[in-house]
Structures are given as C-alpha cells and as structure tokens.
Amino acid sequence: MLVTSRSYVEYEAMFDLTELPDSVLDCCAGGASFTAEAVERGVDAIAVDPAYELPAAELVDTVRRSLPATAGIVDEHAGSFVWNWYGSPERKDELRIEAADRFLQDVSIAPERYVPGSLPKLPFEDGRFDLVLCSHLLFTWADKYDRDWHLASLRELVRVSRSEVRIFPLVQQGAGDPVDYLPDLLAELAGVTSEIRKVPYEFQAGADEMLVLSH
Ligand SMILES: C[S@@+](CC[C@H](N)C(=O)[O-])C[C@H]1O[C@@H](n2cnc3c(N)ncnc32)[C@H](O)[C@@H]1O
Image (cartoon, rainbow, N blue to C red; front, side, top):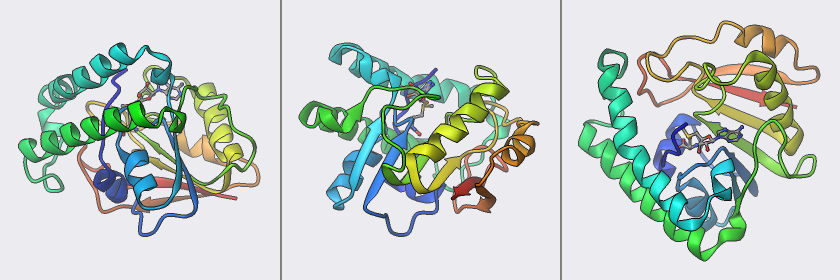
C-alpha cells in the first residue's frame, strides 16, 4: 500500500473543514502534512500509521517513492480521474512534494506526534480526540481489507473519537468502484449517527462525498 503525502489544503477540501476542534487524530496519516500544519494552527494533532515503525531512512524512501507510484495509478485509470480541483497534474505533484517535505521535516523534529499503530486496534484511550479523520484507507483499499476489518475499524475510529469521525473517499482506489457493503456496515454501528455528505473536492470521478459518524 502506498504511503502518500496529502497536504493540509487537500484535507481541508476532502473533509470540508472550516475550523478545527482542540484535538484531532489523522488515521492513517502516512506522509501527509496535515498534522504538522494543524499543530501550527494551535491544534493538538496526532498522526497514526503502521509506517511509523519503519527505520527513518526507510520511511523517507517509502514516502518519496509514493509520488511516482500514485501518478502511475492515475495514468492507468486516466478516465476515472478529473482535474477540476487540482487544475493540473503539475499542481497536484507540487502539493504532494511540499507535503512530503513538510511531513519528513516534522517527523524528524517532533517524532512524538507520529505514533505507530494499525486499525482495527489503535493505541489511544476512549474519546481521546474531538475529531478523527481518515483519508484513503477505509473503502479505498477494500480489495486488501475485508468487510469484517472495515466494521471493526469503523468501531475503533468511533471509540477513540469524542464526537465525530470523517472518512474520505467512499470508493475503491483506481477505477473508483463502490463498496457494496457500505450501507450494511452503517446499519451495524449501534449508537452512531451516519451521514454521507458532499465535499468541495473531487479527484476520482464522482467521489465527492465523505462519511460523517457522530455519537
Ligand atoms: C494511501 S495512504 C493515505 C495517507 C494519507 N492519509 C493521505 O491521504 O495522503 C494509506 C496509508 O494507510 C496506512 N495503513 C495501511 N494499513 C493500515 C492499518 N491497518 N491501519 C492504519 N493505517 C494503515 C499505510 O501505511 C498508508 O500510509
């Protein structure tokens, strides 16, 4: 799986963020610069990802390799992507390179913000974060993780959040196929209100919705 580097502005659009609450978890943060940039805005932000177990040099290499690999996926499925949000492939690459640089700088100066961990079992107490964000893991990699994993992971994201979880996108990587069992999973989340909400971001054609879980 790719350890990609999305930027704060991409997160802002994917999750339709206006202002951030006091504490936010980015799960699975990969090489994203969201945490570094949220901390700069005064937020208690933490990133979690299994990739943070890698030795430093290997993490740098893994993050750097994700950019050409992502471009390869986009080229392979060119008809499934739209460029109205990014404007051009060059602008997308620019944002991702800046984000990777920012992430690698922050992880070296504040490693305590980057916690190794994997869904469906996160190393945080119940309700630790006001808001939990999840970009490009659940549903995106439904070819790798099955329905049971998704249900357990949704419950775990809810457990570590005090009030809200946002997940984007709701389709699989590459061609953007839907995940058929998504509605059934939501019905199985007792005590949680789920809403599928439109966002001002689209890259995979038609994938302009996030899932909001509130409790
Ligand atoms: C496509 S990247 C997304 C990174 C970042 N959120 C972004 O939007 O650029 C997917 C990330 O999920 C992480 N990952 C894979 N399996 C995971 C799991 N079981 N729990 C949490 N993170 C996982 C990978 O290490 C990788 O960094």
